[in-house]
Length: 102
Image 1 (cartoon, rainbow, N blue to C red):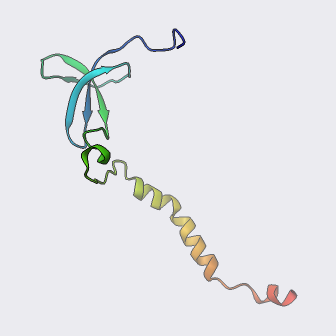
Image 2 (image 1 turned 60 degrees about the vertical axis):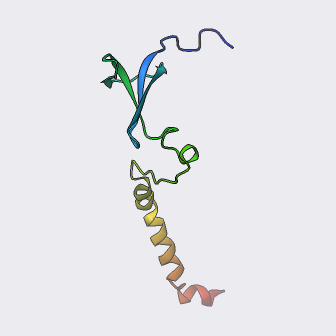
Image 3 (image 1 turned 120 degrees about the vertical axis):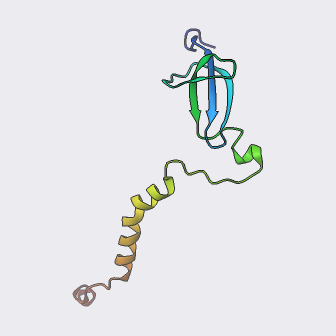
């Protein structure tokens, strides 16, 4: 392993999975501006998670739908113009002049 490339500023932080409202104390070097008061009365940096082993279907055995940022709606809006263009171009007949020249 190369020396001097790994962070040395590990500190205790609270990880919180907001999808199942579960928190735990661990160590990390990740930057965060949020803090939280933990069960022991001390204030720790807070790292917010959208999914963890507490909420992931592989670990829970339950299939849940997670769409925190409206990803499906965003995808549909982004590609709606392509779907409408494909339908109109397939439905429009070719002009007669092009067919007669061939």
